[in-house]
Structures are given as C-alpha cells and as structure tokens.
Image (cartoon, rainbow, N blue to C red):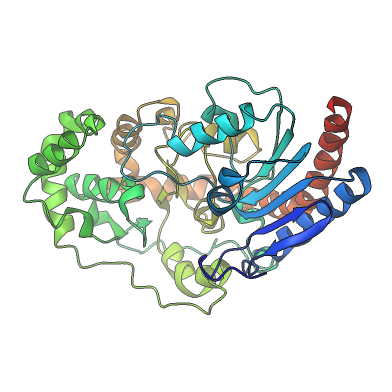
Length: 408
C-alpha cells in the first residue's frame, strides 16, 4: 500500500507478523541499504513467528508508525537512515521532545525487545536513563550508504591550484530554522573579514528580517533561546557579519541534479572545481545542536576534496571520526572545540582558534604540501570500510537478534 501523503523521496516499510503491510516508495540512492534491510528481515523470518520490522527515514518511521503503535510485537526492529529531526529553533543540546517520547514508548512497552539499527552516532546520549529493552546497532555514516558505487569510483582532488587567491570554502544550500549554525557560521566568517581569503556559498535569508545583531539576539531571547548569549563576546564580529550576509550575493547556485539527487554527481560536477582551488573547508554538517547525530557526505566530500576540515557538527564528531581511524590533522587544525558542550561556544571557538587557517593562505598551502599523502589515506579508508560495512552490520544484527531471543 502506497501512502501518497508522505514526502516523495521517503522510504518506509513496515512488516508485521511476517507479512509486508506498508511499503512507501524506495529512497533513491540507498539501494545497498535496501538490500541490507531485506537481509535483516529475512533473518528475522527465520527466527521469529511474530515481529515488527520498520525501515526508512528515521523521522518519518517514528512520526507515521512507531509513535502511534499501541500493540507492539515481542520483537521490534527499526532499521533506518537519517535522524530524528524535531529540531526547530533549538540553540542548545538539550534532549529533543521526540527522543523523550521515543524513550517513553520503549519504557512503556517492557514486554517488547526493541532493536534500533541506524546511522546516528552517539544514539544513547539522547536518553537520560538506560533502557533494558533497547539494543542499538550503529550502521556507520550516512554517506556510506548513499550512492556508494559512485563514490567508490571517485578519485581524491590532489591536483591543487597553488595560485588560487582564495584558499578556503564553506558551502550550505539549506539554512532553514533547524540548521541555524550555518548562517551563524557564515556571519562569523564574514565578521572576521575572512571572505577575502575564501569562498562562502550561503544564503542570508535568516537575517533579512532583522535590522541588527542586537535585534537578532532579542528575537531569540524573546523565544527563550537564551543560548544566543553565548556569542555576546563576539557582538562586534556578529554585527558586521550579519549585515554582510543579509546582502550576500554568493549564494549556493548549484544546478538541480537528476531526480536521484546523487551526491556523487554533485561532487564531480559542482564541487571538484572548488576543491581544486581550496585547501581548508568549514564543513557545515546537518546536525550541530543535538547530542550525537549523523555524519553525511558533507564530511566525506571534504575528505575526497583533500581539504583540512573545521567541523561544524555535533559535539564529539571529530573524536568519533578519529576513533573510526580517520586522520583529522590534529597537528594542523585545532579541534579543541570538539569537546565543548555548549553549541554556540563551540562554533565560536572552532573559528577563532583556527583563524590562521582562514586568513593565511601561504601557511595553509605549505602545510598541505607537507601532509598531502595523508589525505589519500583517508579516502582509501573510507572506500575500504564502505565496502565492508554491509556484511559487518549484518553480522552485528544477527548477533544482536540472537541475544534478543535469549531475553524473551
């Protein structure tokens, strides 16, 4: 049964008592993930007579199915990409209402064993207490399931233009309300006058209704988003940057790609020329304010682009990547910001502590020459781990299911 009320790119499947009851259009570009889900479902068929199995975009699976279910089976499997959004306007890393509701759902159904498999890192940080009937399997990064074959054929951008006048980039198409870190980052960069040395592709729509930085702070304080005051020490920078970004004309004007929205094509056709002329990237990831989150193609495109990364991402994301084996160039980039709990304090420190990387092109280019081989190693690690990921995750799934059986 196809539910046309859901977004056109959604991919949700709900299987119950060994019978497929709902199927929503497959999400293009995630074919390997769909194959993985089918393997998991088939394994469950062999193990259980009755079970619930949900798959698709995490947010939509929760909203349209799990949140309204009043009669769970003894075993509930949730295999998802993406994350729970529910993030509109928050400037803190407080646990979002959707996660609180999810925790209540799990807690209030002790007769069911829940197994969540998703691409969210630090998933358990979103729960204030342990849940005995919850098991979690991390499925790697979002980018490792998205048009994988296309990325496996991409070569890293090692042929750099050392005559380029601008040496850093920062690109963000989507700067909507739940991604406020992006326009705030853009304003901070402009307030540092760093645009003379880099390319900022970003919209200033977020600020156009505000006359000044003081007015913008008042707006957030009025709406009980007092965390905006973490930037009070940078009022002069933010005032200058806000005024610049309001009138910024270097928007992200990437052409719309085919309906598959293939990020690998976006890389080869749109981003690779930008990476050829840059050496540092302020990576504006999808999630910044939440506790834990996904790591998308934005991070790994920067790796393929062979740029030093300054990560605008959730707390601990740099440590997470480092633990996965990736070289985060700690001897070049000051990642001390990564451990800061307060999001906007983390944003300011990420940029101020790495100001030399943003303003001194000669220094950055010299550092790039000294460490050029290390970029290639990151790309090779990504390709190797991505090839191995489906089988590795399936083995973890089977092991977790066997342990769940023992608890029934």
